[in-house]
Each structure stands twice: as structure tokens, then as C-alpha cells.
Image (cartoon, rainbow, N blue to C red; front, top):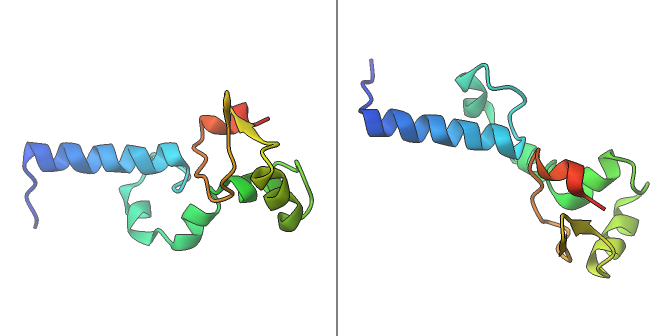
Length: 95
């Protein structure tokens, strides 16, 4: 059995909540979800993937062109990087 110090447990909880806020784990209910994280979980949070999922455009090639040309904003910031990571809170502010 592993014993955690208070600071270690706090860091673990903070990391777990960060993964939830980013959107790579679906719920805050189980910490075991963190053990099964894959690279594709992070790729699904990329701006280009989120825009296709939200049906802004149909194809990835089209969305990458729009992003690189500066047609997409997240809050007041114009984003030109298709690999920009979108958190759960940012999804509502994509224009």
C-alpha cells in the first residue's frame, strides 16, 4: 500500500482536476480513468478536431485552412495554430 503525503495527494488531485478541465477524462468520478489516458484523448481536444466535431466545417483540410488564415477566434484571441488545445470552458467561446 502506498502512503501519500499531503502535498503529494494535493498535487495528484490538482492534476486530476486539470485533466478533467482540459476534457481528456469524461467525469470527475474516478481517478482510475487517469491511468487509461491515451494520446488520442489529447488529440480530440485540438482546435481543428473540436471545430469538426462542433460542425463548423465538414473536413479537416478545410478547417486547417481557416485556422491558419486567422478566421477562427477563441475568446478575443485569434488562433492560427490548428494544434491549439481547447479546454471545456473554451468550447463555448469559439467563433
